[in-house]
Length: 210
Image (tube, rainbow, N blue to C red; front, side, top):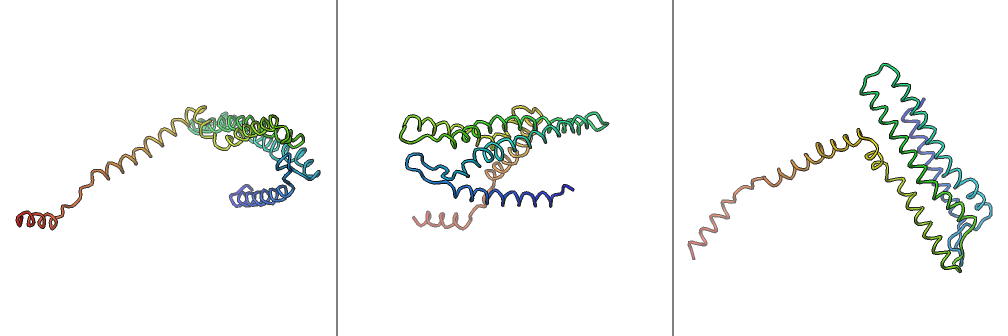
C-alpha cells in the first residue's frame, strides 16, 4: 500500500496545506504601534494558542516522530532475533540508533521555541517597556536560532553518535571526493602544452635582424 506514488501524493497535499495555512494565518497579523507585528484577531489568537503552536507544530510532530522511532526500534529488535546476515543486522541497529538520537534532538530543540511562542502570543510585551521588550526579542532570537538548528544538525549528530556512520563519511570524503579532486588537480597541473614552433621561429628571426 505504501508506494512512492502515494508518498508523492501526500507530500503534495501537505505542501499545499502548509502554503494555504500560512497565507490564511498571516492575513490575521497586524502591525500594532506599541507591540509590533501581532495577531489582531481573537479567533486567530485562540487558534495559535491552543492548536497551532502546541499541537500542529508542537506535540503532533513530536508524537509522530517518537511513534515511528519506537516502531523502528521494535522492528530492529525483531529483525535482530531472526536469522539474518550480520551485515543486515548491524545496518538495522545503526539506522535505529540514528533515528532515536535524531528524535531526541528534535524534541529538545523544538520545545523551547514552541513554549515561548505560546507565551508571547498570550502575553505580548509592549514597546513602551524598552528593557522588557529587548529581553523578549533576545529570547525569541535565541529560541528561534535553536529551532532552526534542528534542520541542519542531523549530519553532525550522526557523526558524533554513530561510529559506523563516521567511517562511512570518512570513506566517502577521503576515498572518493579527496582522491578524485587530487587526481583532477594533479592531472591539470601535469598537463604538457604543445610547443609553438612558429612563434619560436619568428622570435629567432627578429633576434637575427637585430
